[in-house]
Image (cartoon, rainbow, N blue to C red):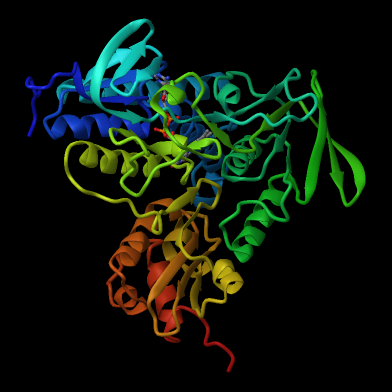
Length: 468
Ligand code: FAD
C-alpha cells in the first residue's frame, strides 16, 4: 500500500492541514493507503496535545506525584532527606519529554513518506492551498486545525497575570497562589497540580458542580480530597470581573452577593474555540455548526473532497477522538468506507486518585429515566491500592437490570489505564457476567472492576454482606 501515486494531476492526493493528534496520524494513514500526502503545520508537530495540552500537563502532574510520593516515602519505610523541588527543572523535564515525542513524530512522518510543510495554510479554492504564499494543489483536503483557549468577554480578562493553559505551560517559575476560573477537566487538573506542589488554589465554577460527566458521588469524594489539599472549590459562582496585577483579584457573584478571590495568578479555563480564522473556509463553502465545522459520520464536510477532524469539529474535544476521526477521514479520503461512533469514548481525568469513565453515567441514567442497576466496589479494600498508599475511591459499573453493561465510572489509582477494559466490554456489547467471569490479575487495582461486577450479582467476597 505504501508509496506515492505519480498518476495524480494534483501536487498531492491529500493535504492534511494541522499536525495535532488528529492531523499527524491521519497523514500517516493516508500515506499507508498509498497516497501522496502533505502535512502542513504552522507551529510545532503534535499540536495542542503534545505542545500545550495532554503531554505537558501530565509530565508536570507526574513530577508533582513524584514529589508527593517522596514526601510520603517514610510511610513505607524509605528514608529520604528533606524533600523539595526545583520548578525550573520540573519545567525542563516536561520540555524534554515534549521534545522527544516531537522528534518521534517528525521521524514517523518521514519514514511513511509524508511531506511535512511548515507554514500557515489557507484554502484558496477547493483544490488549492496557499502556504505562506506558496500554492499547492490537492485532490482531498483534511482540515485538522484544532482549537485554542477561549477568552470570554469578562472585564479585565487581558490583565497582568491572567493567563490560559497556553501561557501557564510555558512558565519556569511557580506562582505562590492561584485562582482558576472553570472547574472542568483542565481546571481541575491544574488545581491538582499546583495544590500537590503546596500552593493554595481557588476554583470558581459557574455550574452547581465541577467535572461534568462524572457521577455526583465521585465528585463528592474528589471534592473532599481537593479540600484536604487546600483547594477551595466555589460552585454556582459567576465571575463578573478581574483586576490583574501582582495580586489578581477575581470578582464573582454567589447567591446574589458580590465576592472576591485573590491569587498571584489567575488561570482562565472555560473551554476552547475552534481554529477556523484565516484558513479559507469561505473559499471552500464549508458549512458550519455554530462555531465548528460541520461533518457527517464519515468526517466529511458538505463539500465532497473536504474532510474535517478533531477539535475544529466540536464533537468531543479529546486527543484520542481527534486521532480516531483522523483514521476514519483518512480511510474515506482514500476510497474506503468507515464511520465514527462517539457513543463509546473513554474520558480520563488526572486527579489524585485518577478518574475515568465511559458510556452512560448513573446520573444520566437517572435523568433520562433509563432502567439501571449499579455494582460498585470501595477501593479501600483493594490490596494493590493499599500497597500504593492510595486506597481511596470506587469502581462503579452501571448496567441494565439484566446485566448488559451501559457504562463505568472509576476513581482509583491508574483508573486512566483501566478504563480501556470497560470500553472494550461496551464495544463488544458485553455484560456484567463477562466481567465477573474474566479472571483479573492479582494483586492489581483492576480487581476492583471484577469486584464491582460481583457486587452487581450480589456475590462480592471482599466486602461485608449488605444488610437485607
Ligand atoms: P490540535 O492539537 O489543536 O492541533 C491543531 C494543529 O493545527 C496545531 O498544531 C496548529 O498550530 C495547527 N494549525 C492551525 N491552523 C493552521 C493553519 N492554518 N495552517 C497550519 N497549521 C495550522 N485531550 C486528551 O485526550 N487527554 C488529555 O489529557 C488532554 N489534556 C489536555 C490538557 C490541556 C491543558 C489542553 C488545552 C487540552 C487537553 N486535551 C486533552 C485536549 C487535546 O489536546 C485536544 O483535544 C487535541 O489536541 C485536539 O487535536 P486536534 O488534532 O484536533 O488539534
